[in-house]
Length: 127
Image (cartoon, rainbow, N blue to C red):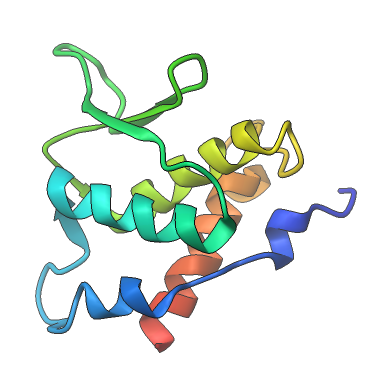
């Protein structure tokens, strides 16, 4: 796999950590209001415009999606924060003209968006 800046460019702003002062139980399942803040803090950290945020259409089988045309993250009512990180990575790639190569390929370990989400999750938990 060729070098990708997203594999090394993981920014976890302190504001993100401060949004979750109590880390017991299911703090990692967040509603859209907290997801909006997470997306804003990450966008500020990367110096890009925050994505829009909306709910997934009814009947959609996905847990979360990113719409490249409207620059909008689409979520269920409550999502795991790593899903929000993953969708943010697609937005970051979109806003930087493909610099971050967010193609999900076959998913799993080959998806740079999931690699980014996992690395950001590790940073977040260590803060």
